[in-house]
Length: 366
Image 1 (cartoon, rainbow, N blue to C red):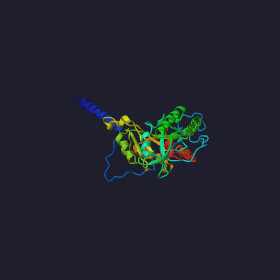
Image 2: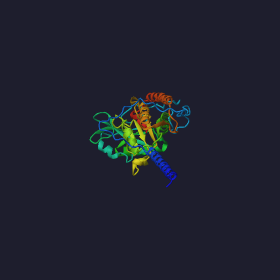
Image 3: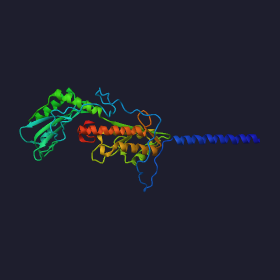
């Protein structure tokens, strides 16, 4: 074999090795990132101190705050010029039912009623269309309004239906269904209900729904992978370091609220199919959605500041970019502007006795 043949064979081998090495490097680079094995003594890293990615294009996140002609639910409007909902004829708040967001029909009783009898007479389905119905009794011993409890006695009852929620305002058909179920309940306990005028209550429901629609804010950031994709386990590991726990749905994690039974402070979601894959380690996730349901979370918890902090930390640790839903990078000044708008929104809700995170706000914005 000539020296030229040997040289060509060696050169061909080197080229083949280079191609194989390059393909291996590309495959490794594109493979989903896997969780790290943590030493038992390793603690979770601290939050904050990481700048959000800034882009050259300013994202547009707001709709016109003066365009409030439609009453359908829409993206957040932080500064609408709307009148407050009608307050005329509202009585003092009693129990969980509240005249601010409920139609309340008092039920007069002939005598004392045992809680077990009230429970037995409750409607089989306590909804009128999409609006929840609730029954309360005035406890004869404590003088407090409460949901009927077996073993207690009540000297009066009241039944109510919610005026509005995120499905819209209470309408005439739903009000009629409420009246029918309330009358059947009152007949079963030998009570006499007194219903407010339907047209007045439906009009009040529409006003409340318009106010709620214009002051409803559900924010979302999208964290997009810059280079390598992420595996579900890698996402869960990074999020758990910041306090997130697994949610009820595969592919969803939540940052729990310290208040027992309260909605989570933040949500984190990724592709459900990736979480349910036969081999999740090979599932490639390229984006996460970090969300905040503003009216559901007390402003004292500073949920938006925590949202920004979480987004920045995850972006730094996972080599990701924080964007809006349209893929535009979020600037610090844009986030500052959203924070200022949210402060005004919080103030407006508080002046209407619907402070974010309160029982009434959670019911109305649900």
